[in-house]
Image 1 (cartoon, each protein chain N blue to C red):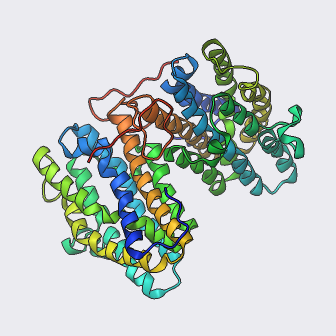
Image 2 (image 1 turned 120 degrees about the vertical axis):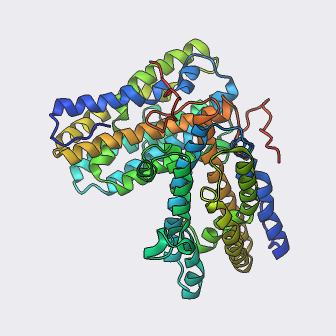
Image 3 (image 1 turned 90 degrees about the horizontal axis):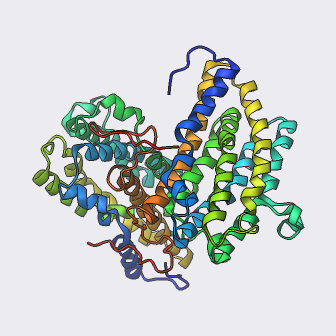
Length: 261
Length: 261
């Protein structure tokens, strides 16, 4: 990462934020290439959806942590929409289609993949590395500045492309793809661009010293790393070399890895 | 993990603690088999030592966090030795041989492997997954009971065997093995058994309800998972399939992994 000693222009800061995505957003990861290209078995996709559920369910914890550190009510109000998008709205958050949140939509995906809901929600079979990477995100926004917390959310700049790729890849390649199982990704195509316009504006407005610009760039890099690390762990356990850690989810028809003394 | 509803005898609790090591201590991990069996290149061993340094340097933070939560001065005094063992003693902690701590000893290993000290200490090249797993340990002892924190240290029950295996494996197989580079492991052969006698006694004395026994067992399992996850990350990046995440250490003679759009 180039050292920043002089203040960057808004345009240059924005350019460098995008450059981080170009270099290391997780659309580049081999696991996603396999996933979207129809190269994974159902069991491997189950492992991905199961682990990714822990990320989904943690995102509102992350956003509420950020909000708990904002002292401007207007800013908190602007940020609240993210929590509602994931948790759903009120009593009807699981039934009224317009109010169904992202977490419930993700569970429709795991349902469609044949995973038991109780098992998914229990988080029992997830890879420890998934937990560490996701928890690192929640801890990051608790410990760093609000500017850094907001900057870390800017991977949403790169998300619509991956969601479009995923929808078309799933539809072309997998039996389980239908309106119900893909509704999370379709919904995010509307939500993410709205969120990220706000976040990017906030970062460009508030990173007004070289130190703050460095922090904002480092925060976005940190976020891309933790998305990447989740796929590394899945790839190692379920694709290549296929070493499933003791106690983690074992897809049907797969033998749990035996580790010899 | 079997549910515990009735209080286990001391002997049965001890047996179950050992059974966790039998099932999932990281001596079973393929990376360690390769490391100790002389099957790794110098670059791969560098990657291991570099990443493991972050664990070494974090152990005193972990132990100080535990101590900060103990309200019995006698208990704190008993625990302090661990911090001194790693940090070294006073001004002479880097020079007077008897007072040299584990962190300095680890740096002698990375020196012997040809890694630049400043680079090692900077933590710049470590895998993000290493950071998450190690930080999960520090966070764990900050957030859970002292009993759980002590129980998580009981992987030391299994450590002397792995250190002996490592010393003999390194001596038999690698040029860089000598008294200086192996001094960390030799020293731990004396220190770990002393520490763990105290820790095991504490757990057996203080896990006196079924709930506490469950927590103690879960804490030790948690610890074995985070040691395992560190090797999974190293194995994925540097052995098989050998996908180095963007920005992480690239051994000499190895090409940084290129991720195509």
